[in-house]
Image 1 (cartoon, rainbow, N blue to C red):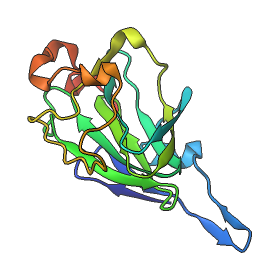
Image 2 (cartoon, rainbow, N blue to C red):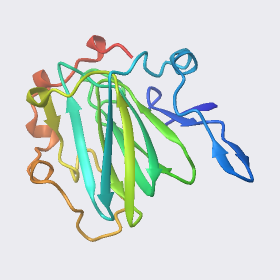
Image 3 (tube, rainbow, N blue to C red):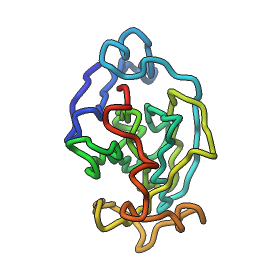
Image 4 (cartoon, rainbow, N blue to C red):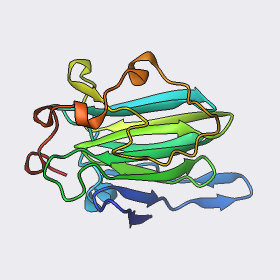
Length: 190
């Protein structure tokens, strides 16, 4: 597998080794020793699966003080997957990176603790799976508005307006979130 740095050094794009023959293909979606060697993990406790239709935007979400690192990949369809550094004091605080993940390219995105995550669906539908390093804690989940001008994500939305959950549609802007509710750069272990 190849592990590539992104514009945010702690977020990694992973290109698994794919073995293709006349029957189809085979790949390892996760192997603990190999991923831990590349600072992905070190372990996962929960898998999540979502099915979404074209134009759906899920996110931007972060948990604190029960942070989740996430390993994202797409089983069917295509998404634009985004990570935003929300670690107060980080040299890349408020910056984002986005990658196309699809069933065709089989890429994965590692999003460490302290980063918000979201994606928009570019294909007719998308089946997205992600492994998490901590359990979901609804009471500590933070949301960030998808169109925050301070973050300025360049979403390649297939529709004029994304399909949002009511929670995501009402998410605050970064300037409205107290920095005391966000992870501190020195508190997050990657």
